[in-house]
Length: 252
Image (cartoon, rainbow, N blue to C red; front, top):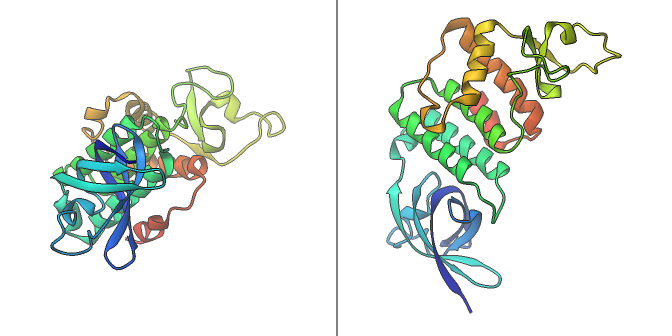
């Protein structure tokens, strides 16, 4: 016996099955991440063809059985076609989906990451800030949603909010001047990165911004370079995972 359920979400990935089918991974607001089989969708005339594409936001009618979930029908709300118009945006959107798939769990509430992904795609469409900056903001906030957020308002060793000047990705956040200069025997040292006051403020600002305002700020020059380097290092250490799309993305 099977039951039907209507979900709203984004197709994170697609994998071909046989000649005409696909296995889709969908991030939905109702059930979190879910894998479904879309039968016959690779046929151009299939009613499931359009809705069975990665980086597509829509409504999905899912038929659940004991062993598999099947896509019965769907309605596209936004195909994000602008993100598929050039290689850079294709690579970035693919990477964002892959990261979201890694950090989400089936049958868990993943609304925050779904909303983050949708707003990230929307920011890419508007083209108001550079894609590389969008990437780092996205990485920063998805780690927060996954419980791995950077502690950037206080020293991770002593807890003071004064004199924060160093990022230790290995230890999960910022250090004050005193703790950063402590002997290695007293505090195991990973990779340390000196932060300017402007970069520290930008990190703190990113942590506290509401999602809907997340891509509303711009960084320039040295502050932007330092910010992107800090988030990149922190994400690399905390995610501790090799993403397939990252190598191609880093080459552009």
